[in-house]
Structures are given as C-alpha cells and as structure tokens.
Amino acid sequence: MSKIAYSDIMCYLCSMKSKVFVILVCFCCQILLAQSPQPKREVRAAWVTVVYGLDWPKTKATNAESIRRQQAELIEILDKLKIANFNTVLFQARTRGDVVYKSAYEPYNSILTGKNGGNPGYDPLAFVVEECHKRGMECHAWIVAIPLGNRTHVNSLGNNSVTKKRPSITVAYKREYFLNPGHPDTKKYLMDITREIIQNYDVDGVHYDYLRYPENAPQFPDRNEYRKYARGRDIDQWRRDNISEIVRYIYKGVKELKPWVKVSTSPVGKYDDTTRFSSRTWNAYDAVKQDVVGWLGEGIQDQIYPMMYFKGNNFYPFALDWQEQSNGRQVIPGLGIYFLDPKEGNWTIDEVEMQMLFSRSNDLAGHAHYRVKYLMDNVQGLYDRLTDELYTAPALTPATTWLDNVAPSAPKQLEAQTDVEGYITLKWQAATDNDTQNAPMYVVYGSDSYPVDTNNPANIVAQRVKATSYTYVAITPWSRKSYFAVSAIDRYGNESEAVQLSQ
Image (cartoon, rainbow, N blue to C red; front, side):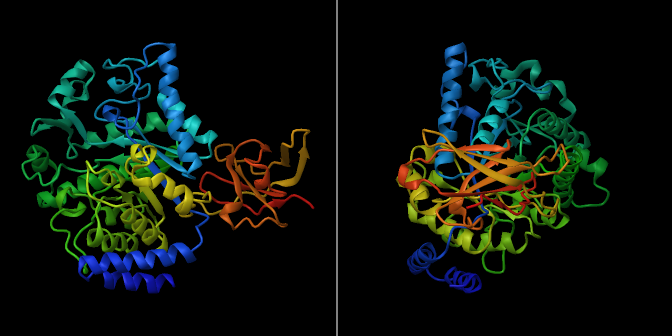
C-alpha cells in the first residue's frame, strides 16, 4: 500500500463512525506492520519527568550510598530504553523555577535531596548526558518555560525564587506564578538559562514545554505591557507575537552558540481547526497563543513534539495537518501512553500501535512517549510490543539538513582482530574533517553477508562511537556477525559512505 493511498484512506476513515473507523484502521495498520520495513532514521523519544519524582528519582541523594541508588535508578531507565532501541531522551532539566543541575540562576529542585536548593552531591544533568551518550542516545534538556508553580512552591524557594530575584518579569494569576511573556526581559531570562545549559553541557537539544500562555486566560495580568508594547495589535495577536518572539530569540541564540543543538517545543496537540475537523476550541493558536505553524514557516524550530494525547478523529487528521504544514522540519507526535493505565484512561495498546504506524507511514519524523514510567512498567505490554514488533531494529535520528547537509569524510582502513575469547576489536583510520566543534562520530554496522548493507537498520551495531575503535561482543553465539562496516556521522546527522571490512 503506497503512502499516498494510505493517507487518502485515513482521511476518508476519519470521517466515518467511530466503531467502523477503529476496525478499518486496525486492519490497515496490520497490513503496514506486516509489509513495511522499519525506517533507518526515526526519532524514538521518551520524556523523563523529574517534577514530583513522577518518573525519577525515587531515592533522595543524602549520602554516598543514596547518590549511587539515585543514579542506578536512572541507569536502569536508560538501559531499558537502549534495549528497546530508543534513541532520544527528553530529560526534565528545569521544572518550575528550579532545576536539576548546578545553576547560577535557579536552585536545585527539592526532589533530588528532600530540601529546596539541596545539592545532591553530583550533577544529574551532566550524569544523564554522559550516560545517554554511552548508549548511543541523544539527550535533550527539557525546560518548562513559563509556569513557576503555585504559591506554596514559590514560597518554599524563598529568596532564590525568580519571583523575588526578578519580580518585574513575573506575574501572579489564579494562585500560580508565571513568567510574563509580554515583558521584553522574559526572553532574555529564558535565554540565560538556555545559554548556561548549552555552554556547560553536551546536550543534543533544548526542548521547551509550556512555552505558552495559560489556556483560555483573557484576564492574564499583562495589561500594562499591552498598553506599552502592543503598537495597534489586538491583545490575542500581541500575545501570540510575544511567544513567537521568545521562540525566535532563543532559536537564534542557540544557533550562535552551537548550531547543531536542536531546538524544539511541545505545543498543544492541535494547531487550529482543520478543513477536516474542528479542534473544539482546544488548540495551540487560540487557546494558548502558540503560532507553531508560523514558527515552522519562519524556520525557528528544528523539531516539534505536539502533545497529541488524543484518540481517533482527534489524532489522525491533526497529525496530518502538522505534517502538511511542517516546512520540512521534524514533527514527532507526543503519544499519551499514560492513558494505557486504567487509572488514567481507557486506551488499549492497539490505539498506540495504530498511531505509531500511522505516523510512520505518513513520513512524520518519529514518536515520543509520555511518560517513561509507563514504558518501564510495561503497561498493557507496550514495552514488549515495541521490542518485539515496532522497534526491533535500531534507528538513527533524522538529519537536520536545513542546518548543514555536508557529510563528513569517510573513515579508512578498517581492520579487525579477534581475541581468544572471541571478542572482535574493530579499528579504523579517522575521518579527516578538522571541525573540532563538530568532530565526526561513527556508526558501526555488522552483517552475515558481504558487503554489509548500511541501509538496513537491523545491521546497526553501535552509533555515536567517538573513538576510532570498537569491540564487538555478540549477545549470543548464533547472533554473531561476520562482516563489518563503519561510517562517519556528524552532529547534524549527515552520514558518510561506509568503509567495509575486507573479506
């Protein structure tokens, strides 16, 4: 079944009654699962939520042993994601006016130690970045942007709260505090936090959540700024422009520092009404003033992770709408896998599988799972379904070719040595590129046939290898590879030709 035909069928099915729709979509997805190869490039992401310890941590870091246990909890999550062939971790680095790394601007979140501002004795962001990279996964710093928490939380931070340190850029609204998007210094403050992360940590992306106004908030207390800065615009358009200016300012600031670092947001899951379906007033454009399609068209986003925690007609047509208006940027639907938990919703695992296959068949850039706890708990067997059917082979993340589309030079002179225990050590001559900031890494491929087919993701043995050697250890004797190849890959995802191990 061609992609165009499948898309047309889906648009038709979206207009049908729900029961028939589900039956036919299930049928189409089973055909796709049987016939469609898994892509070599696809974002496979999971959100790791730190606030309230929802996903991590469970242990408070108060001494050497508890630090070790806290780190071990995170390693267990990353190991399971690696086994399931995930390649992207969205790690919550800033929650609500506090953080999980050493910052000059905001205090440590109390979840780490049980105390506000308590130093956990190590840097969790540095730790997770290093551990992700060891496993060949990207790590994106997830930053909650505008909300600062309720009064109890803000009061608990005392003089370390931004509401006390920078009161001019904060406002109180409905018993909560927010950064004020209408104040021109808000974008500078968020960029200060972003700059601190990018300069001090080797993150692969910065990912902004709640970069928006509170939903349906006509009385948001920004009238003084509106009178001062509106310049004839109505208040809704002025507010949209405020959010867009923050996005623009941060995007340009990031690219000046490290142009390969991906900039993304998680907008509300429906942009606006479509020609196919109404958003029923719950959309990014009107309800929270996010002109996401405008950001994509202007090129001030590399990725978006729309929070598409919906079923049926509330997912499929809106996913198509995002893709049709993406301007070539990467759209990764956020999947509400928490609804698989009977305490949260009434979803079945087939719903998640259908959404994943639909996204894949219509060239969306991948999937993001909210939250990682439901993967770790294997709710309704989702983790097993991924490892057994949907993510059976590794995948590279899609290249950001609008930033750079020049592949590094290929490595040379691949050699192999086998020791007495059967371990195979591969060595090669490095790619000759001299860009120290964008030094190439390597992808190792293995196969039972020569030459190794580097277009087949099942042949990916390792990725993001920084050294010019790699020791291959087969998981089982019968899975041992006989032939190998190595390519170079840069921080933008551009991949060179591969050097094959001579027969």
